[in-house]
Amino acid sequence: MVGTQHLLLFIVIGIVAGFLAGKIMSGSRFGLVGDLIIGVVGSFIGVWVFGLAGISSGGVLGLLIAAIVGALLLLYIIRIAKTV
Image (cartoon, rainbow, N blue to C red; front, side, top):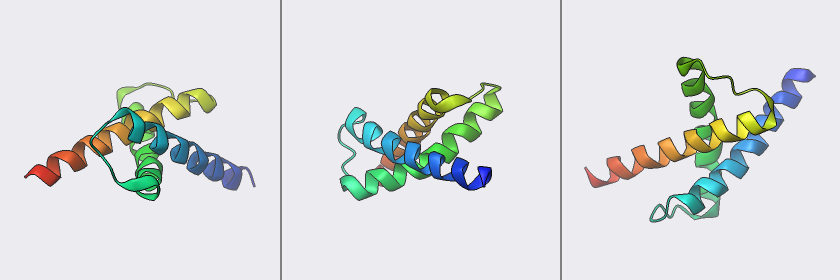
């Protein structure tokens, strides 16, 4: 059950991170649902990148920061891909 609760927390934090990243990075208008999906995917990316860098993303605040960074990174990559 702990794994399911952890995954649910991960998704909820990803949704919050997507909303915040959509507000932070102006010009990336994907709509509310698009920002939320980008946040969830970005949370996985952020935790992965933080792990590669050796930075712990433990706790809710650490997970939120990693998720926001991941969502911003994903939005940046999407922005570059759209201009190419």
